[in-house]
Each structure stands twice: as structure tokens, then as C-alpha cells.
Length: 113
Image (cartoon, rainbow, N blue to C red; front, side):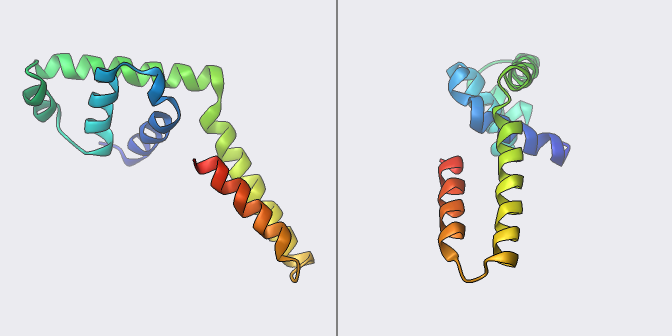
């Protein structure tokens, strides 16, 4: 399995998992986060490998559709990059003022909740 795709699916899952059915959540989490094979998932749920494969493919498309419409993940990445850029500027220009860095750290913590 391709690492970039795995990382993306795990990230999208973090943002949109509550919009999925329980079965979709379980299959995606087992497949991408827990690195189960299609066969292992199929055995655990008493279904065919093809059924698991089809469900995962549909769920991947659904997660991508949510991202295209809502942009939660891509906006998160952009905000993180901007915060890091601001921190670099503050450290360079206002090295002694840790209050700003503290505020930016709090913003990042909120983003990660």
C-alpha cells in the first residue's frame, strides 16, 4: 500500500469519520490505521474480500468528496504552514517575546483537537 495514500486516507478519516457509517469507519480504520489485509477484515466480519474491497473503495471516494466540498484537511494544512511561518518571523524579529509563540502554540493545539 502506498504510504502517501495511506497518510492521506488516515488524515481524511480524522476529519470526516463522524460522517461515515459504523461499517465504513471500521473497515477504513482497520485497513489504513491498523494495516489489516482485506482478507483479515473479511474474516472478522464474515464477508467476502470483494465486499470489503468495494466498501473501502466507495468510502475512499466518499472521503475525497467530503474534502472537495468542505476543504477541512487542506485548510488545516494551510493554517499549519501559516502558523509556522508566523512563528519563524516572531522568533527572528521578536526573540524575547514568548507571548506570541505561546498564543500560536495554543492555536495549533486547538487545531489538533
